[in-house]
Each structure stands twice: as C-alpha cells, then as structure tokens.
Length: 162
Image (cartoon, rainbow, N blue to C red; front, top):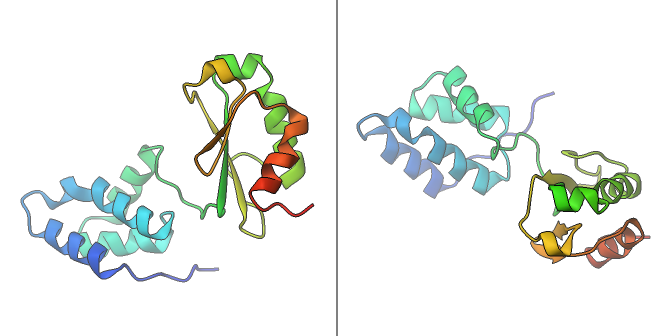
C-alpha cells in the first residue's frame, strides 16, 4: 500500500529548484532532505522519489544519503516523543527498567509509534544530565530521577488517557 504524497511547500520546492541550478547541486542533498523532513516530519519513500526527480539525482543516491545519517526518520513520529537516556549513568540507575515500563504502558517498542499516533519512544546515548539520572525527555521537557512508577504520571501529563 502506497502512502499519500504530501506535496512540498512552495518554500521547500523553491529551495530545491535554487539548489538545482548551483554548481554541484548534489552537494545540497542533505540540506534538501533536512528541509523535507522538517516540513513533513519524516522522509517517506515517495518524498525521496520526488527529491530524486526534482534534483535529477538517482533515487539510490537519495536513499543512500538518507539511510547513512542517523538523524533522518522514515516513519511518522507521534505527537509526543518520549526519549529515554541510556547513557552509562542513566543505565546503571535503572533506565532500562524505565524503558521497559514505557513499552509496557504504551504497548510499543523503541522506534515505534502508538497506533493512535500520540506517542513515540526513542532512546538516546547520553543527554548530558547525569546528575539527574535516569532521564526521560518528553517533547523537550526533562524529567530527572525517573523510576518505573513515575512513567504513567509523566505520560498523563502529556495526554495519556488512563
């Protein structure tokens, strides 16, 4: 089943056209993909095909660049992104158990989105707040010293229905 293609906004389409007429237009591929992802939330197969056509570069090159860099997403994220730090300090202070509880409550795994599109779970290598370990970040809001029993309360603050 194919996804519905969202057309690029005028500003993204114009940016792609402007890159296309510069010397070495393929060197702008990363920035083009970043603009598309910022606008659409992720890179669909169809949007990468469209970038390929508009920039006149092989789709294999677009896909290769997109899959090489970890910051590109290929599935839509939920309205709320829940990130658990798995750095050393967080891990030894129980981040794994917090992540298990999140997965249990939301019924999804890391990298997945709830069927209603409300929540996605991610993990990070280190969020740099080791003194507050374990750390959970929801939509940019940092929660420190999180333990499994705190998970439901935190999710309810972001719209989880009990």
